[in-house]
Length: 346
Ligand SMILES: Cc1ncc(COP(=O)(O)O)c(C=O)c1O
Image (cartoon, rainbow, N blue to C red; front, side):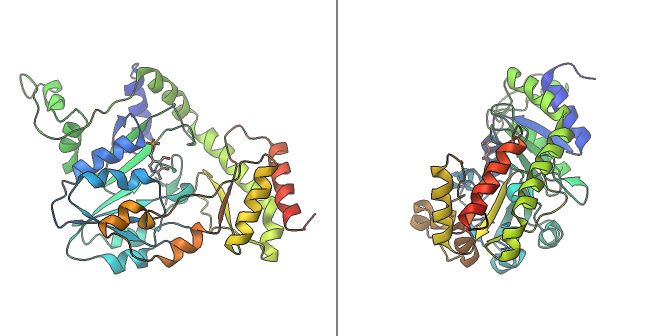
């Protein structure tokens, strides 16, 4: 058993089924490494969701690739395989999917769109530590997966992330990218007598203090995931009557999710905004979520904007309720009561 916290974190990730993980200072840094790994050329296209955090797209601004935003599936708010299929073409080099709220994307259908591996499948699994798809950890299903351990995530070490490489032929290039573009890995294996700068890269790695925290969190991953799922279920059970009445709409939830976020959709934007205002006035930190990337000034300026009906529909209706590992049943009961009162169910 390795004693150094970096090696122990890597060993714990590997034991979970991540084939070749590299620790990074953040999930964003892991996505920056991914953008370099894909070695995109002028004319290449990358398909990705619009309903995601800016970090999913940001690293690609520094590449010559054209971004094509796909619409979402209204049942899960994950990327829609139909929308991806519509955007696929001879220039498509990569497909990035994001497992929203730790609920797995429809990976069977997305993997089938990879055209025998010509298109790289990248999983932004920032929300998804502890979640699986058909028993495999999210982030270990596509060619590359990225994880985030920032303060909002189920597993957090302050700031941190991981790049998980699942395609063996990318092990070497990823090792160079994560070593500031040097062949340090080859040097450490004794294959070269000194190491030198050989290509693009990032400053990867994780602070020692953060790695210590990460080891502890990873050792308790099953407990963390059980607690998160239990909190998720308490919300779902508490609000089920409102769903049955048609006041709110729940997402389709997979048993393999990690319960990272609890959200529902209001019937219309005005109701969502009124509910949000009432909850916030009562001191409940309910929130909306991502502003669609395809409507952002960056996308509009670059001509990456195309209407995405389902994304725009969901963004105007979504409401997230507070959810964190240490949440008590009493806190949750108060929030559920407030939502019920708003809909006149109390
Ligand atoms: C979907 C998604 N991708 C990427 C990231 C970036 O992760 P980090 O904050 O560790 O840089 C986040 C962080 O919130 C995220 O939610």
